[in-house]
Image 1 (spheres, one colour):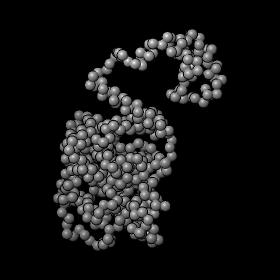
Image 2 (cartoon, one colour):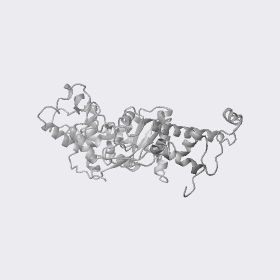
Image 3 (cartoon, rainbow, N blue to C red):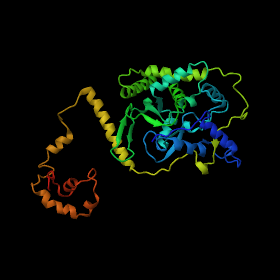
Length: 395
């Protein structure tokens, strides 16, 4: 269910600013004097983000609910000069850009947040959003971006991998059961992800990461983005190179817009309100939203990843030399051929009828209901060294 935002002319970040100023017990204001000096999202912003998140505070990428943390797109440690420039470029008032705004809080698992922090992924808005932001950035006077986007509750983004993720395999489990979905490089099938995070925060994050990519890696990132565009926008003619350039133009125009002399007004405070710093014993260092509760054996996930890697490798080999239909001089095959008799005995046609009562009486048969792991055929082969015929209707 999509949530409707109730932001007015003042951003939710501003509302948080006022609420935190009204706090009198000091718990919200002792920023740099607490133990670990790690900035986190305050509880008010976190609660607001959970309310408007279309995924119900699940991971925006994998849709899981365990081990969820907040991942800021615009760093919580952004310096005052950068924030002042963005405040003006984004059509905000002075001291009104709060980096702990709910619209800067992406919900992901700890593992995914670390990958974002390590710059292994870039998030791209929809092409028409990039083009709209470029048009707005070219306006003579700054456009109020929060007001521009306030009528839209959710936004789509496409994850684009860095080349270092070429050998990675991502296994996604659907929210309500069903089969796992396996994604491989360039992960065009992974997106789009849907979130409440607003595009101007994402664009700043993506430009900073993309501008750090050098040499041939830049070409590979562009190719990965092109694969995403070809899959999700067939026939539109979007080119990754052009959209990369457009996104860079947007961020550069924000950074180079000359701030008006009358912009800095001491209306609220002469000192910027920085993100809240909390004691490690209260929130930890990661603004944890949910506790880690493993619902799936880790080895099964690794098993699925291993199969996917094998499939990718086999396909690459086949692309080069084709599939080899016959096996010659294979040591393992030769060993089987040298056996004096078949490894498994042929079973009589009535074997199933005489064997089934033994299976049903055995205690293991009552517990191994999932035939994807161990079936009655497996049991027959293991205990009796026979292969059972396929069950017929009525057997």
